[in-house]
Amino acid sequence: MDGKVGAGTTAAILGCEGPVLSPDEAAFFRASDPFGFILFARNVENPSQLSRLTSDLREAVGRDAPVLIDQEGGRVQRMRAPHWREWLPPLDQVLASPSGMAARGLWLRYRQIAEELRAVGIDANCAPTADVAGPLTHPFLRNRCFGETAEAVTEAARASADGLLAGGVLPVVKHMPGHGRAQVDSHHQLPTVTADAAELFATDFVPFAALADLPLAMTAHIVFTAFDPDNPATTSPRMVRLIREEIGFKGFLMTDDISMQALAGDIADRAAASIAAGCDAVLHCNGKMAEMEMAVAAAGSLSPDARARAEAALACRRQPDAIDTALLEAEFERLLKGPCNG
Image 1 (spheres, rainbow, N blue to C red):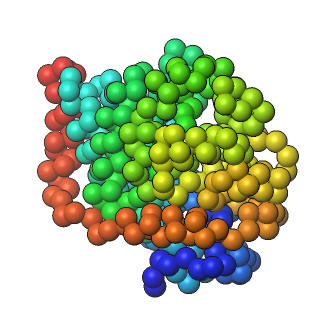
Image 2: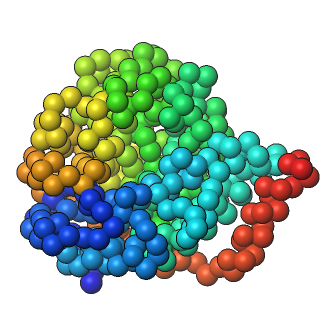
């Protein structure tokens, strides 16, 4: 089964309702041919079940479609004990790392996460979070970040992405062009950032420019008044142009979840506006069939440019580098329990 997307592949990444793919879902996915799939805790029970589900999703579309998950660690971790490792929130791990060793610790962390994901058929992780935290960053995001300076975040996010890639998992850098100044939770409200352009280019946008070579990225549902006072980045042609031309991201750009309440209108409105703004695909996560039908109809097929970016991103999937898991685990344990950490 190859991963090549077709001319009719829908510009959407979709979820399913439970741990087993239903006949109705399989038929819908077969007909609509979404670019990929995303899984959540509701889809996860144990390794054998999860492996069956990822296989069934790919079988439904007849190709090696990417299967995504949010496995950041901390609160945003869909695969949990007892079957998988538990991880500190990213910022907590950075703060617990000995001086100068945060990047190495994050590479080890995400290399091990990649091994767990690949073992159950998941080949894309919605990480790293390259948002720069600040004193007013909303708690829903703050400890998912890597630090409070663009330099620290850039180094940490690069190490995290490299760990995933070495393990054969595609990283999805988020949330372009920067979510750190949000003071409300975009799952429920639309954040507005009033910082001027010079300040944003000197801070929030820096990690994303440094990571612009990564294959996949996710947008932020945030209004940046310095550029577009009326539309969040996800549905703003000006902001998508900024991501492409000024930040320099050339990879496959997906939206954050369009079922989040930061976006106006119904699901069809949100999907259509996102694609019109220049996003390559819409991400719809809750698995509700009626909403998925609306998203698919409004998103349409991948554009020729989006298909080319999709193919380039999928070409970055590779067989994992060989590792000695026990040695990596031991190094990780030593690093976080070093002399500076008791």
